[in-house]
Length: 208
Image 1 (cartoon, rainbow, N blue to C red):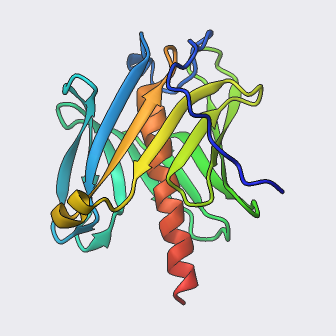
Image 2 (cartoon, rainbow, N blue to C red):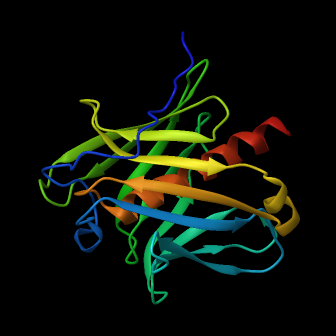
């Protein structure tokens, strides 16, 4: 089986009809967001998720005494949008994202692939009201990934910059996410966080 190589292009085609779970966060134009995350936290940290122009679009909370364990995504004012929780009963990893009221919005499951990283995301699309599935396909190093529809159209691209000299000094790592027009920015952000949580689950199992 060949190693999966995410697409290199950043000019993503518009998605029509739109795809998402939160209608207020459907991108009206191609959007890039980025965040810098502390690798090790010793206190609860509220971190901004910014658009390319610097505007804060979302926020997420790092929990104290954890390694990159993010469990809540909020709007720009700090109001909760998504609360992510791990299902520890699964071997490949499983994260469920609920809204502020506790209703499930989507879930992400790890899938076994020999030379690549693959995750399946299931949700009820807010526009069509029908069940939907998208896939996250990344390289074996976990640094780049595409979020794609079953027909192959790319919803988003994730670029995780690992351990540059400057980031090591500042205890940071950076994420850049390119999102197509017509795609839910909050959903894609939640998927990115959920994938990291699944990686943590797998890493913790290997240590025991």
